[in-house]
Structures are given as structure tokens and as C-alpha cells.
Image 1 (cartoon, rainbow, N blue to C red):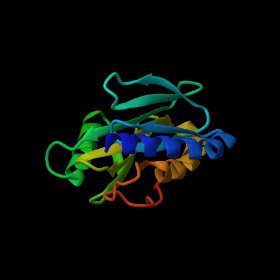
Image 2: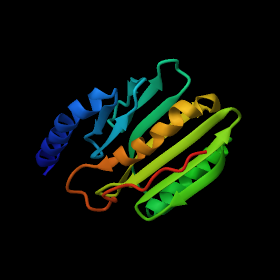
Image 3: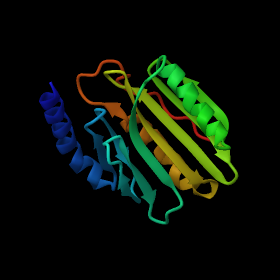
Length: 174
């Protein structure tokens, strides 16, 4: 089963590389949790986790940061997991001004001082979830804001996982 999943992820990556590379987007695949997401132009990989949970990307100027990661849903369900993450971000000083939480996908955003936070999560197979967590300065809104929709649509589970939506609804922006 794992070999089949790995082969499927590899084929999706190979098929998507020419289209993504043509406009500067790159594809990130996480084999541990079985999801992929597009990384916008101007963001570079700065760190991968030792345990395979995910990776950190930063903008060329270092002012914006995106985390792409998977997590096991420990207690409750996906909706409870997201509400907990929203609570953690509030404890970190973020004022959450938008949140939409469903049983299989969620988005929320907010501000802290001069920064904007946008988080998207989807449920994956086997009791886990995939996320992107994007933090950027408000003065980069005209640059980063338009790419969030594409990032939302690109975050999806590996083939064979039927728990997550086939096409993610559009993103709300601050």
C-alpha cells in the first residue's frame, strides 16, 4: 500500500512539474502525510523537519514565511483540531478576523501588529491533516494576497484519499 502511494505521489509530481515550473510555481509533496501543495514564486525552502512532518519556506527578502506540514488528529475530529489551532494562534497574539471550519477543510486569517496570517487545513486519510500556514507583512498584501487562492486549490491529498474535498473552495483574504 505504501509503495503504491509513493508511486502515485511521484507520478503526480512528475506530471505537474512542467506546468508549475513554467510560471515559477514549484510543487511540494509530503510522503509521510500524503499531500501536495504549490509553493509560489519567490519562496525558497529553508528547512525540512527531521521527522518528515513538513517544511518551511521563506520569501526572497525573508519577510514572509510559509509552513507546509502534516499533523495527526489526536483528540476529537478535524473541526476540533482546527479550533485548537485557532486558539493557539490567538494565544500567540493573532487577532483572528475570519474563520470557516467544516468537517473536512478549514481556513482562517487574522492580523498581529503589521503582519497577516492565513492558514488552510484539509483532512487527509488515516486520521491526519495537511496545512499551509502563511505569515507575511501587510505591505506585501498586493503581492501575496492574489496567490493564496492558488495555494488553497493546490493543497490536496494524495490519490486514493476520499475524505478531503476534490476541489477546495476559494480563499478569503484580509
